[in-house]
Amino acid sequence: MYKIGLTGGIGSGKTRVADMLAEWGAALVDSDAIAHELTAPGGAAMPAIGQAFGAGAVAADGALDRAWMRDLVFRRPEARAQLEAILHPLIGQHTERAAAAAQGAYLVFVVPLLVESGRWRERVDRICVVDCDPETQVARVQARSGLTEQAIRRIMAAQAARATRLAAADDVIVNDGATSAQQLRARAKALHDRWCQLAAAPRRPPPCGTGLPE
Ligand code: ADP
Image 1 (tube, rainbow, N blue to C red):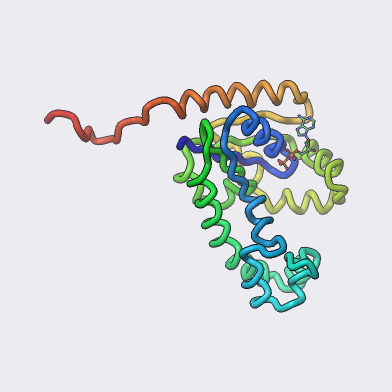
Image 2 (cartoon, rainbow, N blue to C red):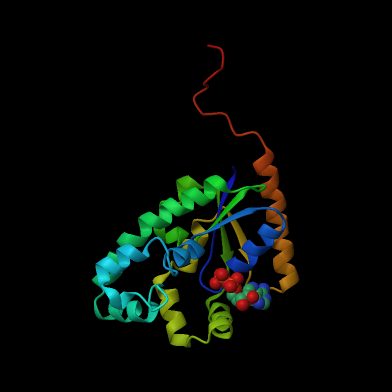
């Protein structure tokens, strides 16, 4: 299946774009949603999390106690690496399983930290970045979540810089403060049509002339 890696900073609009692509017939695999399922009540990561961090890490309903974990990571930064060592292999397995079962015109991996994690380049045919100016990111996330500006800027500072993300992109969807909902839809649709064409086209032959007469 033809594979697109869709990424963008927090508040850039990648969820909006992904929802439109799904509406038009793309298959989605969302790594944030998978991480969330793994730490929901009865999630596959919960036994290992309970074992590693103790009962305090598990809320009454059996889900990860996010506030408790945030506090622990703040006090003991090495706890983050411990949590990631549990989650990352499981996210990888579940992502592969979801991708293998996916059906659609092409497959979109929605990965907030795609550029940061490095190993995605060889796993997708194209990387698409939803691009937005930082001020608009802050305003959108504030309106959506009620997080403070400082908290949002801290999250943004931990993500790749705008220029780094753009440097990794094969395709860019501009969704800045001047972009209307209709413009965003038109930009996403143009790329969707292009990707459908690419997905339907025969794959490039391997390099080095395999199969050609000597
Ligand atoms: P991300 O998934 O990248 O964090 P979202 O797709 O959730 O971003 O978008 C962040 C917020 O901004 C959402 O509430 C979304 O509806 C809104 N939004 C995104 N793009 C636009 C736009 N062009 N005009 C107005 N609101 C937008």
